[in-house]
Amino acid sequence: MTIKSLSTSLPPMPKIQEIIRIFGLSAKQQLSQNFLIDKNITDKICKKSGGFDDCTVIEVGAGPGGLTRSLLTSGAKKVIAVEMDPRFYPALKMLEESSGGRMSLIMANMMDVDEAKLLRDAGAETTNWKDKSKVKIIGNLPFNVGTHLMLKWIRQIAPRQGLYEFGRVPMYLMFQKELSDRICAKVGSEEYSRLSVMVQQMCQPSIVYSIPGTAFVPPPKVDASVVAIEPRITPLGDEPIKDHHYFEFVCRELFSQRRKKLSNTIKTLGKDAESLLGDDIDPKIRTQNLQIEQFVKIANRYIEFPNKIAIDHLEFENDGKTKRKEEKLKERVNKINTRIEKEKKKQELIIEEKKLKKEQREKEKQEIKENLEKQEIEIQNLIKFDLEDKIDNEKDEEEINNSLLDSYKYQLKEALEKKEKIDLLKQKKLENKDIIDQDQLKNQYHQNNNKSYNIDDIDIDDDDDDEEEDDDNENIDYDQFLNEHFKK
Image (cartoon, rainbow, N blue to C red; front, side, top):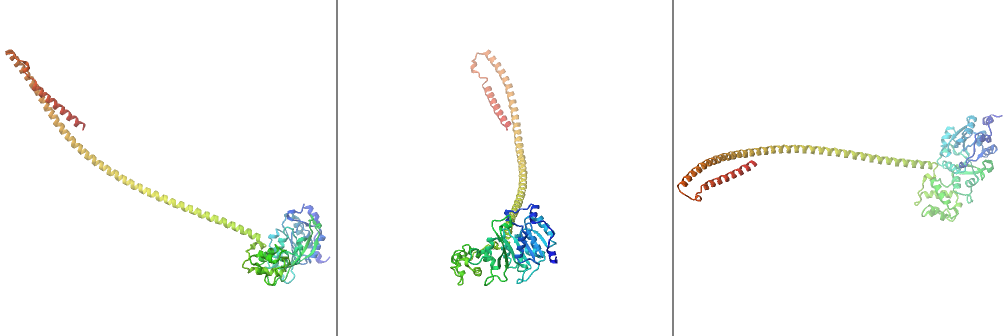
């Protein structure tokens, strides 16, 4: 046994069928999984792919590890197995531990993987672009993502990114036969398509091995092919592509009506787009008969075309979806930040408005307080003045009343004196009357005795009656006078 065989051999391990049974593995239809479990086929794939002796290999979709084993035994220096389905982790981990450090297991989605970082971490060797690369990529790609992955790597070639930081890395990819035929189709054939132009402009594809569907578990309805895709040292075209995004856009638009004449199809690129054909491209030919170099010419002319259609560049980038998500997230964050700023300004305005209202209320309160104080002072002054006026008025009234009272007292005194005089006069009159009456009676008596006379002729009481009447009137006037002044 040679030293090389010792370095590439693996310790005794269960067969892939037993691994699938031990770990209860099954292919998921939603992930387009189909397992290659026949080691003879996987060994032949490695051989048809030119061998992997002393190469760093990225395997896409390792699954239960059938192709991985063939890669390790074919002399690969390092195998980086990428798998996203966690169900395969135990089987692949066991294989990694048995590889003697020549295998690294990466659990990830290949669409999100940075190939350059994987290769740097694995210590991959970088070569010149014209030399044969020491890095290769191989994979039994799920049918639903195979095209997307291949375009991801094709788009890395021109800028020398990802895989192509390490040289002219060839790809050995398993596709369903129909897709393989389209990738490798010749100009004018039924299978010639946008994918054919995009791949063949940058690479030279060829089918190196065909695999019947019965070789897979579970068997798909179609056969598969291994396509070798090796980047060209110089891409096809009289001049380099100016903008790869517009190159893909032009190919897509022209192949949307592949059987029509180019003079009609070219109109999808904008008004007066016929000028893009120039004098060197026949407008009567169909899109499917255009040479790849002619697609490059039209795409480059389209860059300077005044009526060109604005395109979404993210649609033609490998990380376009990620960038779009980031843009949407950024836009959402900006919207949220804008809303926050608006709300913040709104709150600041509310706070400012509340502050102004508070200041206004404080000012109004202060003004009200000052007004109240002024009013209180005015009221106090008014009360003071009213009290002084009232006191003055009361004093005046008291003086007037005292004056009136003195006057009334004086008048009353005079009235009382007058009354006393009147009463004395009355008394005297009564006394005088009694005397007169007695004297009259005596005289009458003597007269009667002396002569006879008519009593009617004697009016004794007339004067007295008149005097009494005058006295009574004086008494009435006096009483009225007293009553009026006592009321006052």
